[in-house]
Image (cartoon, rainbow, N blue to C red; front, side, top):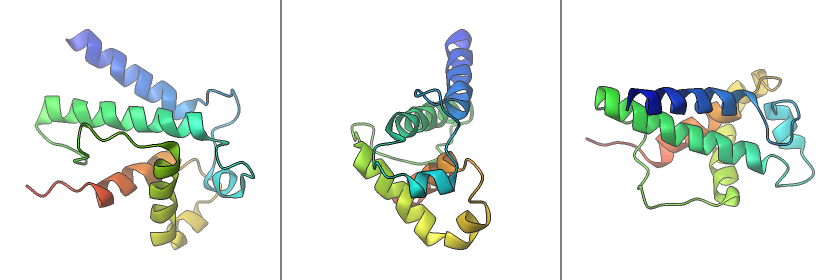
Length: 120
């Protein structure tokens, strides 16, 4: 079990710093200026999987969930982009200030917390 958790952590870290297209990790500016709406699709799906693993890990280790998305809910890339876009819009000053930083993972995580809060 510990080996499986270590593996998940490693994959999560790997996904944070890579893109399946072997290009640079997209910044907020890259994401917003992409002509093709699915340009960063694989990267966003990787972030989603990493967040799911991190959420599962924190629950297993600390009985705490980062967000409470229904387990049977599967989101399309369009829905994930909508969550990211809304988070950026809601906190535009922050994301404008750090437009050159690779913060799509943060935007997705914060969007999940907003859209799927844990009210326990």
